[in-house]
Amino acid sequence: MAAIALFALGFLSTGALLPPLSRFLRDRGIVGEDVHKPGRPPLPEMCGSAIPISIAICALALIPFSDPGAAAQALALLGTALISALIGARDDLRPMGPRLKPLLLALAGIPILALRAYSPYPSLPFIGKTRMTLVYPLAIPLGISVTANAVNMMDVFNGSMTGTCSIILATMALLLSLSGKWDSLPLALALLGSLLALHRFNRYPAKVFIGDVGDLCAGASIGALAIMGGIEVPTAVAMMPHIMNAFYGLSSMGGLYERRQARKRPVRLEADGRLAATADAGAPITLARVILASGPMGEGEIVKAMMALTAISSGLALLTFAALIPR
Amino acid sequence: MRRILEISLIMLAVWGILMAELYLLLLVVVPIPNPRDGVLWLAVASAAKIAIGIASILAWLYCWKRITELYFWRRVGRRGSAA
Figure 1 (cartoon, each protein chain N blue to C red):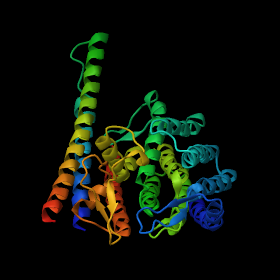
Figure 2 (figure 1 turned 90 degrees about the vertical axis):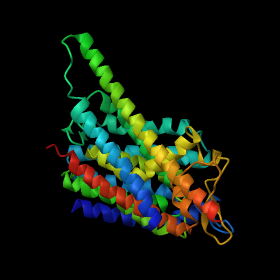
Figure 3 (figure 1 turned 30 degrees about the vertical axis):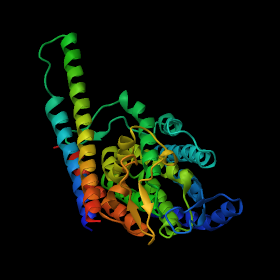
Figure 4 (figure 1 turned 60 degrees about the vertical axis):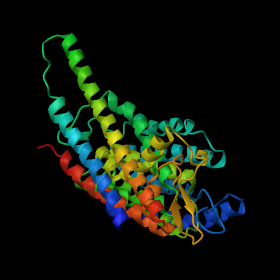
């Protein structure tokens, strides 16, 4: 019941916040160009600020009705979401370097460590629960930084982040239900509700941009939920398109890089409004470029392809979850 | 639709290799007993297992990169020669 109520609260709070927030940001000139459309129309940036606000509303609504363990998880998620959102907002307003941002994002793992909202006995495929009391806490900041950056790198087209992350969160909610992690389930559904509301405004053709504030907050929150719910390995598998996208970029560019630093663009806008992969060997090989390798596509079609790939990786995540159960 | 299927097959191959590696590492390599008693042999055996683990992860990442690059440049090349 709490899970359904929090899903509704996440959806409604984000949906109610977005119209005034987008007007506020547009009036203050916080806009970005939609570079994949002819004429490059300006859209309000940083509308993903609605995500941490919605998480705060949902967490604070849940805590009075929760036992200490569930309250610690809600507070840890709130802390992680707020820290990552602040880093994202700073990056939106004054861009940071490609090395500083992942380092700072590791700080978003501190609330999980401080509130001990994790179990150092993660489940691995084929052998089940393992004891990692020394290594696991050290891996938490790294995990949060990786998920936040991977989600951020996926936000290249209208609705690509919100659409793919909604599928991942729906899968995570199913996995949390199957494993009986009832403390984490309402929080996952609250974030799912928030992302679905945001998707209505960000899907192709977008009316708002999410910005790093929303991308990093959503990615860090997904990482936090995977850790707190003990579904780290299946979540990593569900995020394969995001990891593929980040890994392709990193391996083809030879290290950490910022989109704005890539001199050669991976995709170009054709005269008919469709997008095509560039054949430049120096451009990063991103997931979008791999999808476009067979020929040009419309922006909306690329996002649908990304969502279809995420749905398939989510199916693989369910198979991986089945392998977690020891024989 | 065809391109989604092709990229899904890459994803399936990468996932399959990962699961096979995890199976080998967790059920075959990790349980190998130490050849002899003693702290030195324990350290040597543990270091060898960690080295095998790191090598297999690096091999997995290399496979992933090669499969993707091969697919991408073949597709772009075919499109270029068709145009």
